[in-house]
Amino acid sequence: MLLVLVILSTLAAIIYPNMAKHGLRARTTTTKMQIQVLRTALSQFEMDNDHYPQGRNGLLELVQRPRDSKNWRGPYLEKKVVPKDAWGHEFIYECPGKHSPESYDIISLGPDGIEGTPDDIASWLPDN
Image 1 (cartoon, rainbow, N blue to C red):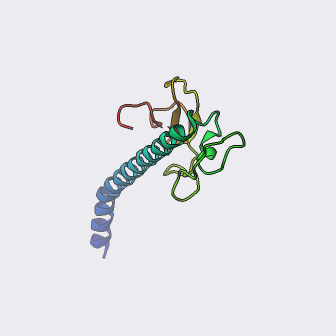
Image 2: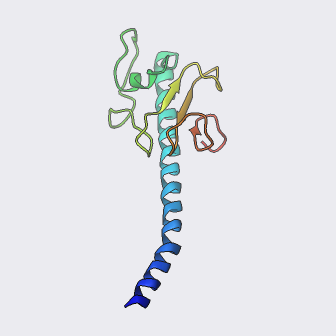
Image 3: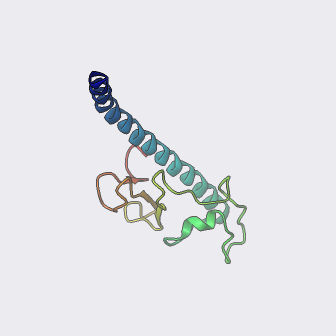
Protein backbone atom coordinates (compact mmCIF):
# COMPACT_ATOMS: atom_id res chain seq x y z
CA MET A 1 0.00 0.00 0.00
CA LEU A 2 2.81 2.40 0.90
CA LEU A 3 4.55 1.60 -2.38
CA VAL A 4 1.39 2.45 -4.34
CA LEU A 5 1.14 5.81 -2.53
CA VAL A 6 4.77 6.59 -3.30
CA ILE A 7 4.24 5.75 -6.98
CA LEU A 8 1.07 7.86 -7.21
CA SER A 9 2.78 10.78 -5.45
CA THR A 10 5.70 10.59 -7.84
CA LEU A 11 3.41 10.52 -10.86
CA ALA A 12 1.43 13.48 -9.51
CA ALA A 13 4.67 15.43 -8.95
CA ILE A 14 5.64 14.82 -12.57
CA ILE A 15 2.26 15.37 -14.20
CA TYR A 16 0.91 18.39 -12.26
CA PRO A 17 3.57 20.93 -13.36
CA ASN A 18 3.01 19.94 -16.99
CA MET A 19 -0.74 20.35 -16.60
CA ALA A 20 -0.25 23.77 -14.98
CA LYS A 21 1.92 24.90 -17.93
CA HIS A 22 -0.79 23.86 -20.38
CA GLY A 23 -3.40 25.75 -18.35
CA LEU A 24 -1.30 28.93 -18.41
CA ARG A 25 -0.68 28.53 -22.14
CA ALA A 26 -4.40 28.03 -22.80
CA ARG A 27 -5.34 31.13 -20.79
CA THR A 28 -2.67 33.18 -22.54
CA THR A 29 -3.93 32.04 -25.95
CA THR A 30 -7.54 32.80 -24.96
CA THR A 31 -6.58 36.30 -23.84
CA LYS A 32 -4.69 36.98 -27.07
CA MET A 33 -7.76 35.86 -29.03
CA GLN A 34 -9.97 38.17 -26.95
CA ILE A 35 -7.64 41.08 -27.77
CA GLN A 36 -8.01 40.21 -31.47
CA VAL A 37 -11.82 40.21 -31.11
CA LEU A 38 -11.65 43.63 -29.43
CA ARG A 39 -9.36 44.93 -32.19
CA THR A 40 -11.84 43.80 -34.85
CA ALA A 41 -14.73 45.42 -32.99
CA LEU A 42 -12.73 48.64 -32.56
CA SER A 43 -11.99 48.69 -36.30
CA GLN A 44 -15.69 48.34 -37.09
CA PHE A 45 -16.50 51.11 -34.60
CA GLU A 46 -13.86 53.34 -36.19
CA MET A 47 -15.20 52.71 -39.71
CA ASP A 48 -18.69 53.74 -38.60
CA ASN A 49 -17.74 56.70 -36.41
CA ASP A 50 -14.45 57.97 -37.94
CA HIS A 51 -12.68 57.65 -34.57
CA TYR A 52 -11.92 55.08 -31.91
CA PRO A 53 -13.73 55.22 -28.57
CA GLN A 54 -11.92 57.66 -26.29
CA GLY A 55 -10.67 57.28 -22.73
CA ARG A 56 -10.16 54.33 -20.41
CA ASN A 57 -13.84 53.28 -20.54
CA GLY A 58 -13.95 53.33 -24.32
CA LEU A 59 -14.58 49.60 -24.65
CA LEU A 60 -18.07 50.17 -23.22
CA GLU A 61 -18.86 52.13 -26.37
CA LEU A 62 -18.59 48.86 -28.28
CA VAL A 63 -21.75 47.63 -26.53
CA GLN A 64 -23.47 50.86 -25.39
CA ARG A 65 -24.30 53.69 -27.76
CA PRO A 66 -22.30 56.82 -26.90
CA ARG A 67 -24.37 59.97 -26.46
CA ASP A 68 -22.55 61.93 -29.17
CA SER A 69 -22.51 59.17 -31.80
CA LYS A 70 -24.59 59.63 -34.96
CA ASN A 71 -23.34 56.61 -36.90
CA TRP A 72 -23.07 53.97 -34.16
CA ARG A 73 -24.19 50.62 -35.59
CA GLY A 74 -23.40 48.43 -32.59
CA PRO A 75 -23.24 46.52 -30.52
CA TYR A 76 -19.91 45.57 -32.01
CA LEU A 77 -19.37 42.56 -29.75
CA GLU A 78 -21.38 39.39 -30.25
CA LYS A 79 -22.39 38.84 -26.62
CA LYS A 80 -23.10 42.56 -26.04
CA VAL A 81 -20.69 42.44 -23.09
CA VAL A 82 -17.09 43.60 -22.89
CA PRO A 83 -15.13 40.42 -22.14
CA LYS A 84 -12.62 40.05 -19.32
CA ASP A 85 -9.31 38.33 -19.80
CA ALA A 86 -8.85 34.65 -18.99
CA TRP A 87 -7.94 35.49 -15.36
CA GLY A 88 -11.11 37.53 -14.80
CA HIS A 89 -9.46 40.97 -15.04
CA GLU A 90 -10.90 43.76 -17.11
CA PHE A 91 -8.83 44.82 -20.09
CA ILE A 92 -7.17 48.21 -19.81
CA TYR A 93 -8.00 50.36 -22.83
CA GLU A 94 -6.44 53.74 -23.58
CA CYS A 95 -7.13 55.92 -26.57
CA PRO A 96 -4.98 57.54 -27.69
CA GLY A 97 -2.53 54.85 -26.67
CA LYS A 98 0.86 55.46 -25.09
CA HIS A 99 2.42 52.79 -27.29
CA SER A 100 0.12 53.36 -30.29
CA PRO A 101 -0.60 57.12 -30.22
CA GLU A 102 -2.41 57.01 -33.58
CA SER A 103 -4.92 54.48 -32.23
CA TYR A 104 -5.24 52.66 -28.90
CA ASP A 105 -3.60 50.30 -26.43
CA ILE A 106 -5.29 47.22 -24.97
CA ILE A 107 -3.61 45.49 -22.04
CA SER A 108 -4.33 42.34 -20.06
CA LEU A 109 -2.62 42.31 -16.67
CA GLY A 110 -1.96 38.59 -17.05
CA PRO A 111 -2.06 36.05 -14.23
CA ASP A 112 -0.52 38.31 -11.57
CA GLY A 113 -3.03 41.15 -12.13
CA ILE A 114 -0.27 43.79 -11.92
CA GLU A 115 0.39 46.25 -14.73
CA GLY A 116 3.91 46.56 -16.08
CA THR A 117 5.11 43.05 -15.31
CA PRO A 118 6.49 40.55 -17.87
CA ASP A 119 3.28 38.49 -17.93
CA ASP A 120 1.19 41.37 -19.33
CA ILE A 121 -0.38 40.75 -22.74
CA ALA A 122 -0.70 43.87 -24.86
CA SER A 123 -2.07 44.80 -28.28
CA TRP A 124 1.17 46.47 -29.40
CA LEU A 125 3.39 43.48 -28.69
CA PRO A 126 4.42 41.36 -31.72
CA ASP A 127 2.47 38.17 -30.89
CA ASN A 128 -0.85 39.88 -30.17
